[in-house]
Image (tube, rainbow, N blue to C red; front, side, top):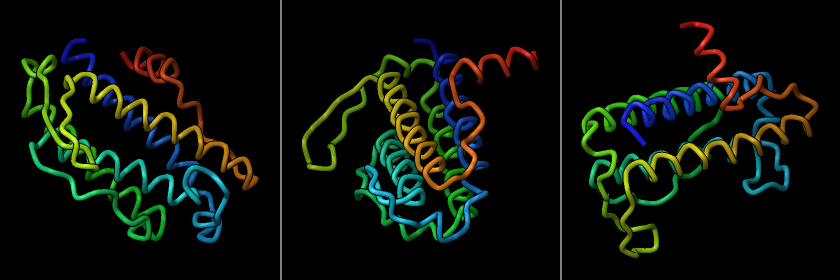
Length: 168
């Protein structure tokens, strides 16, 4: 995997984020936090989990130790989620730029949340982060349907590529 491939994956990740948040923005405040018996209780809690996981990986890229998952209550509404996720995007892009093309194959050493020593190659870490977000955006899509809300526009990777190719 190349540095440009990684940047493209990160572009996809945040494009898909925008797709899902646009759909989530149509929910009422009650629907946003309604318990739904999913991996995470509500749409809000699922969005909060994606953001918290991204924060953990960014912290590891910085060479710091994450403090754990954040409380979903920090995101009272979709605007707060957009703000936090936009800040995470800036930090992710800053870390990728700081690490540079030579770091694509670099092994990053860190401790997982249980305190176990881990080491992963940068491109694998970022591929995991994007895949993790994809999994949970799919859960949000299901919850939106269960709430009788419109699902997001296609978040498929091929839809992202097609959109980029049309702009080129």
